[in-house]
Length: 324
Ligand SMILES: Nc1ncnc2c1ncn2[C@@H]1O[C@H](COP(=O)(O)OP(=O)(O)OP(=O)(O)O)[C@@H](O)[C@H]1O
Ligand code: SF4
Ligand SMILES: [Mg+2]
Image 1: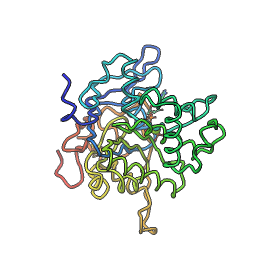
Image 2 (image 1 turned 30 degrees about the vertical axis):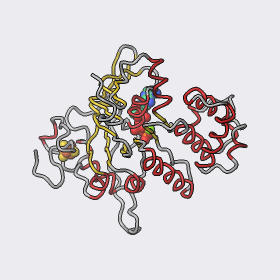
Image 3 (image 1 turned 180 degrees about the vertical axis):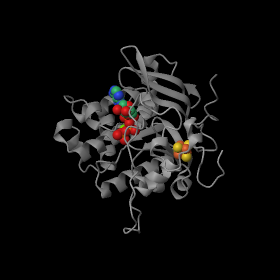
Image 4 (image 1 turned 60 degrees about the vertical axis):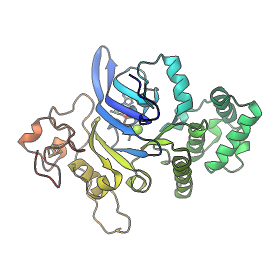
């Protein structure tokens, strides 16, 4: 059933499972992800490399890699996306979901000028004239910190630096005024000044247009400054969710604690960093019980059973609580 758009969250993901299907064999990549993003809210997805952040983002945006099977529910303003015919979904998502890909090179067309790619999207989705679309594209490029944006419209992607490509991707993702912006490591390739400028622009979009944002980053400083809530992922599942300030100030899951202990703390350059021992288990080799158990100092016999997400934390012995 479709919920009224006025009352439904902008994004509601429920029981999202993503699997790679190769030679008839299914390997889980993401399991049981459930979360919402409200209008004007920014939710961070954090976790080590390979935890499934980009897979989650791409499944939501309707652009998963080939050979991937998706189950569960993804609703945009109450409308179920997973059952829409592909063409209808592309149309809806192009207009209402902006997506900043982690790898700009793979999503920008190599032989078309940037102007052609931006103007095309603006004309298709907003019905602008060619001239109005070009003006808007140039203005957006200025806003993401590309000086003389109009000149860049005639360039091809290979003529730009990594940071410029990233900014063009951001400009394209916001060009149609999306309701939901999914940004996968959007500022990683940018220097700090441009990063601050882009974050200011995104904050303005949240404030003025109530854009909902799913923000993937390794940078916990950015999470603290920019995001309302955080979802910490480990081996394909959420292990801690809550207000970003709580997850960062008082992490309850040993993995979330470990992530924080592994990064420098602003204002405490002498603090000792402790990397989390071991590696994220490869796909197909997740432990049956708690997936973090082989790396967890607190693991005991109870952890041989897979913990459910309970009160925002997936752990039998979360910090600050009696064992479950
Ligand atoms: N196209 C693909 N084909 C096969 N496996 C893939 C593909 N893309 C990702 N994977 C695998 O799926 C898992 C999750 O990958 P994903 O890209 O979502 O990780 P991530 O959390 O975004 O990591 P990072 O921080 O490095 O971007 C990884 O094991 C990865 O190797
Ligand atoms: S369930 Fe056990 S192994 Fe897993 S994070 Fe909690 S204490 Fe560690
Ligand atoms: Mg990724």
